[in-house]
Image (cartoon, rainbow, N blue to C red; front, side, top):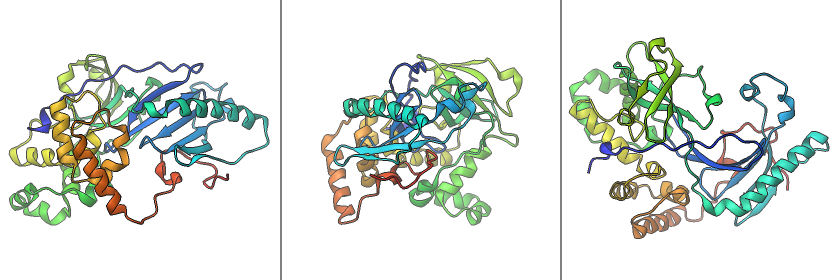
Length: 350
């Protein structure tokens, strides 16, 4: 079964209401490398990428409350603490100030809800504002970015798609030998399938690439808004759901060899694609079979899989991962969210 025939539906976002605690997830993109699950209250958040290790951060929202477009002003996040069921709460540094006392109270609310809700993951995907790199026909080619709230759309970012460091390190495809034979110059310049795929996809964006933000609707259709290097005539357009690639990368319209390369890339991405909701069971089962060869990746995020079809297969992968890890020390909880947040004090105390 070809993975490129699968189409996913978009989710409807929750509104940003600071009086309530919210639970949602969003994709980590360019490239797609997992999902971030969040419990949010006011200016405090508990976040996880594996469903096991959580980090709680607070922000001093008083610093920007009187500023226009305050959501666009970045304030540094302070670690309230890190938590896992096995190790409990490890607190961050405490500061004797009124502002910090208020932030402490917000963090405590999030922590209280975390203790009640951590077993409810995965949360629904709510990042329905999507930035797509367009092909030369001005249609969605590959997903570059997404956000839960419309006011967080970024119109000043790079629109070069990247296959990612993990892809460069471990992705391979037999079809690359045939591609190399057809283009010796490219074969000499490109050292791996991931590098070649990166160059190929960006080339499909044309000499003057453009990207557009879309607000995805409950039926999967998209309402176009502004973009980057985007002709103004495209603003406000409506695209049907089938115009948006289900696996965030267009699989149709390529020649035979490049279709095989993209199919191989989807197979390699299988452990991450299993994080997506709304997959038909037969498609999820195919992805599980492809994912099986990446046992360590499965083990890191299986808790966030919305559904598991072949329990025995996934269990076998986790057993293999345990054996392969052997006596190696587990990564510290501080490494789990290494670069997603800016942290003022990287060495929290008990």
